[in-house]
Amino acid sequence: MANSLLLLSNATIFLLWAASPYILIPYVVNLLVLVSCILYSACHYSLLLREEQALARGEVDPSKTKEESPSAHPASETLSSSEAMQFPIIGSLSLFSLYCAFKFFDKETVNLILSAYFALMGCGAVTATVSPVLSSVVTSLDRVRFTKEIKIPHKLPAFIGGESPWDVGIDVTLADIISFIGSAIFSVFYFKKKHWVMNNVLGICFCLKGIERFSLGTYKIGAILLIGLFFYDIFWVFGTDVMVTVAKSLDGPIKILFPRTLTPDAETGKIELSLLGLGDIVIPGFFLALLLRFDAHNANVPCFPTNAHASFPKPYFHSSLVGYILGMGTTMFVMIKFQAAQPALLYLVPACLGSSFLTALVRGEVKSLLDYSEEVEEEEETEEDTKKAPEDKKKD
Image (cartoon, rainbow, N blue to C red; front, side):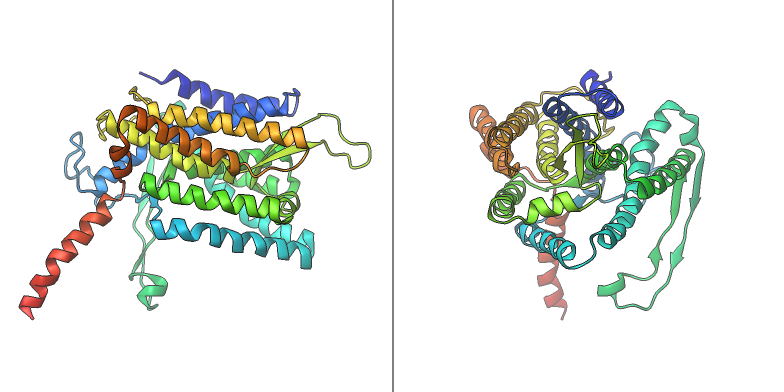
């Protein structure tokens, strides 16, 4: 049975995007509804990671034979605790580098280089977003598949080029090819026009696919990341002009834009726009997606087959989503009240962490929440290596 809220969220994302250039929607309402729908949809599609994680643990899909089961499984990106601690530092270096680039180099040249990069990455994101939709509408497109195994040997050291040969095999459906062609054409038009509506398409696709494909690994790692970025956001917004300068100068899909008026300014010919950085959607989105998968784990939802529309209790996800909406609403209220840019994570981090931990306290599941891990494969490998070490010494 289909999840009606998921279908409604998908439809709302499209309708808000399509209506915004023609109907003036109060930008606070537009922002809150659009972001809530993006989070709801992306987090539910992230349930597909549970199947990949199960396969990586060595579990077998009972609906498939050995011949049908793939020998290699796509690995989702998982954050480690050390990477979570380093993230604010790396983010700060990247942000300050962009700030220096805009300060000391020609702004148009910097934007040209970055726009080319974002157009290329956006092509991949739009393809990955559109292809499943196209496959579900025209099911025959998914049955036509093009497969070719390509291996490229290299003589680079393993720490630079990885293991030889490189496996760059192709396995695409007709839906993928059609989506890629359409996405490539769209990206070229975006590169030339830079229209805010096209910017939002890329921004929304980056959010959806990023949250869908990335795992924080554990609740503790998620908390480390959020707390680190809490201080990162406060420092760069309140302590300096770096964050605001980069956000306003960078003409690329690192933000979603919301019209405050549909009447162009007489001097510039542009409409007035408000913005929300993708980081304020994606970073909490990673955390909410982890909580939704924890809900599925708690409810003993089977990994095979994975169904984004599966019905099960979602106390952690729902409480944190409500917390996020309240946090974002508070951000908007303070921003309008004081007419000054606000670090959204200042309000979103306590809202998301507080609501999820409070839910665990009320349900008496604090230990279960803290023990939940999606890093099983790495843990098992470490245990096996530890067991093998004494045996190797004996042989020596």
